[in-house]
Image 1 (cartoon, rainbow, N blue to C red):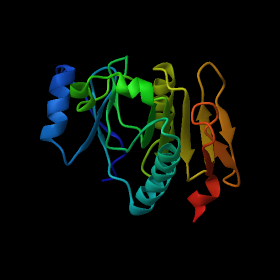
Image 2: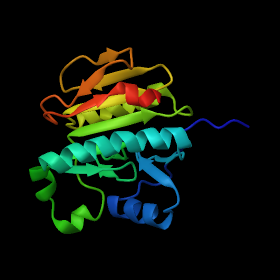
Image 3: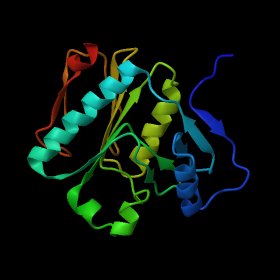
Image 4: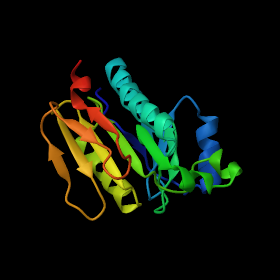
Length: 194
């Protein structure tokens, strides 16, 4: 039997934010998200190559941020509670410093109650592209200022910005920039082909 990911468990009864947080802690070995309808989504672990590329992406954002001290970088195990009620975990997320520091410390220990300013989703072989595109639209409508959906399989990058058409880059022989969101940040897509 071949499973397609992500696996969605249809809601029986919608959990509160606190109940979902506790549910995630009680099932810590699982990577869980929740859609805006309260359905729980089981996210599969990535393969080794995807995990390595994900770390490459996250480390580049982290190192840029260490130099600039402009905000905070988060990995793929971090949940964010979006305004529509969904709880999502982008592969890489970055939040502007003043936004993060405005959250009380007790809320920083749970799922942050907003969408990151910048997100990256990396498509692994088992993920449906349409699912990830819908997730990116969800981030954009929740206030994300810049998002990259990287499809290694097709060697494409979809760039999401508020109130603009999606840009599609169809070659990994290019360099992406953080634009006005992460000023001075660049990422050479050739790193994804090693």
